[in-house]
Figure (cartoon, one colour):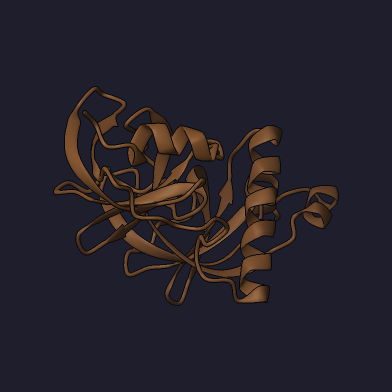
Length: 205
């Protein structure tokens, strides 16, 4: 019987479009019991992802994951692995197209051995104090360590989950990485230099 294939596996036509990319990116996932656990993505396509993790989801279990550079994805566990599990990604065609573009960028970055998120020059703002706001309205004072047209690294006492949407000053973005003293944010759109200058670099009177 091939019930599992019918339930979870992509069709043969879809499978041809789902190029698996071997990556080493990190994140967190939540199981149906609402417990959260750290994970590492071993390989991923727009339709499937394999996680390395200490906590293994059971086949058929629903999973919500927040992954560096990717954001939030949802899916269903298809099989367990020796050191983790694999799941099918449940997403619209538009979301899968976006995933394909993100994975292509990650694959090229790995191929070229580019330093992480150095697409744009980073600068230390003359006015480093700012406010980080979450979607529920909570606000936290933070210090900008450096920023570029595509994102910022900030020093802050709280660490919102990876993939969470935030506003830094007036710039919308999402949390993409945690580090010891704070978080990294990727802006929703590439900013213009003059916008960054007026927002962060010009000292307030």
